Image 1 (cartoon, rainbow, N blue to C red):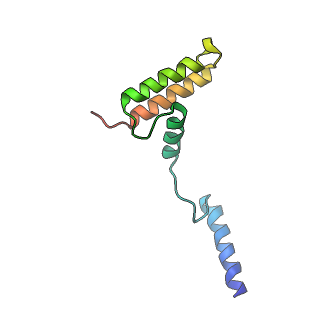
Image 2: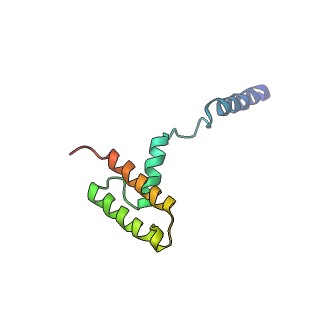
Image 3: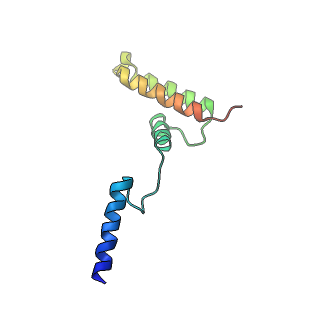
Length: 92
């Protein structure tokens, strides 16, 4: 019985080393993570439409613009988030 537990633990460690995640962790794509971060940055819901995304982007730019104490990197990050979310919208 003790060997079985040792083999199971070793198998789990090999799985973690080979795949980079534990077997019980959900697979989340990099794209899905990027979309989540973009929605969080802009403060929009998952099913936001084009107008909501653009409006949220404008509000965020008003806060992070270099003339208002923000940085160029923040502006670029906000614009990249907007572009990513707009690319995910279905064509109308």
